[in-house]
Image 1 (spheres, rainbow, N blue to C red):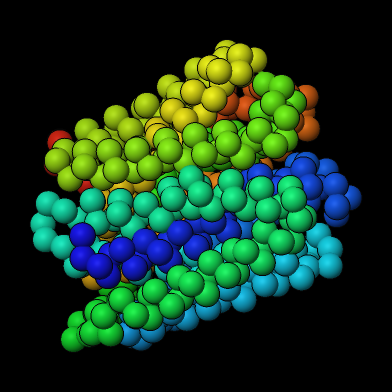
Image 2: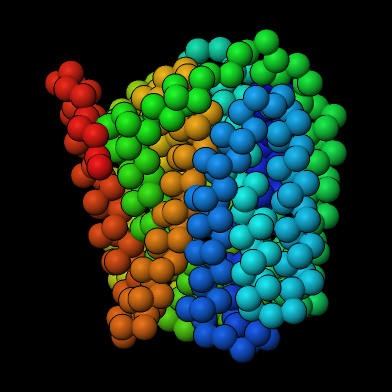
Length: 391
């Protein structure tokens, strides 16, 4: 991969760390700010909704700017937002700071995906996307457990200070290694052409697949700390090493999903979503067995991130050239809308008395709906029929 793609990976690492680090800090934040665990979980939903709103708006607002300048500005917003999280005096301020941080997320990954695919030749585009998203997997593998460990030793605010430092480092790497001429000479598409992508039925189906697939994941992963401590019986310090196992799974699944999507995009799309639904369904019966629970957490990570490159490539292909920037950013927003939906669905299930152990089954049902949509969408390809516009 070109070094510029690896620089995008560094930015993805920073953003991925701040998105996921709070998973290991739910209990300390809930205790310090005197809110319930489901309320603390809404900090994840707030971030995800910030991505959902910020991705299309910032993508359209920056469409005429050089892509490198856009990436640097977004990383600066990310760093400032994490400093605000560390200084937040209460729950409302922390929520506002999380939303501010999230504004950079969708457009960074959306523009970054387009830049990454433009830096490589045909047959390597899904792998380029997967390489950039490796930053997310490494963030989960190293950044999130490290943040949880810092939060356990020095308090949750220290974790956000550490993430802000990561943001500064990523900003420097992007400044040095992303070429200034990236995207130059390309006339921006007309606004109406960018927006026309929203009317394409196959793009809409792709976005819905992404929402539902990741909603299933985050129905469980949002509450992974209380699940592992209160259901499986692990101590709080043991959660960080288990998150490392999840991160290893993410890394393996991300690479595998990219390679599969390069070779056979449609089967990779259906197959990866199907595997995610199956892993979620099998999770509940093994949660009370510690060794099996750790193993299935790793499988969950692999299954979840194997879907990323196929889903992102699907939307880019169906959007076409003129609408790729917006469609790419919207799909990142869709990932995060799924995060918000999953966190909300998990909180509702807990509040309604279903219990933490039932969350994987709820997640499997949600992802199963996404699988049905994927099968329908691919079938429309094979029959040559255009997917209907979903209004």
